[in-house]
Length: 239
Image (tube, rainbow, N blue to C red):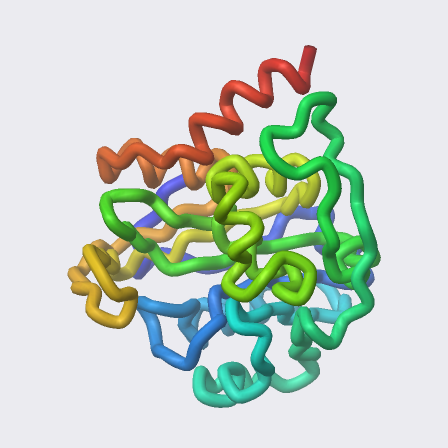
């Protein structure tokens, strides 16, 4: 679903009213403001929407590419919401989870924070980014849930396997319920991430993470490789 950003109000699905724990995965792996990271305003809309229907525990979970603490980034981004628990991937207990694909594209098992498995509803929310002519949307955001101590600094071990294949495997292994792409602006990077260009875009994409990433890719005319890989793997998985 694609909405105008000025019309966006987060209306959680009925399942959230029955949840005991809701986990939100923002893009907050460095201390730069929106559109490089998820805005405080978007997170506030999501939190307020959840609170209208549920008293569930709400968690924010993020990790960093270098393994450094994420708490200073939460502070710099003003993620200071009352009654919200902010967690760092590196401080979590990790468990090894099997990839359900009979023939994984790259990774047969993943180490992930166990708090994900104990959460009833999972949301990934990211800014709209085009990096070197590639879409990097809600499913790519799941990469920072993986501890760098298991996969090399900046996930170097995973990049050697082919990062789009890894993200496609993550889609099946970590079935997030909702993807939100915060597209008030579009952030385009052709080199260093900090040297991108922002332009007004005025949209919000919301729905199944695969669907919203597909919609964003199609609308922007981008080839997002992990989306194509998931499309093929879904057919085999369903068979």
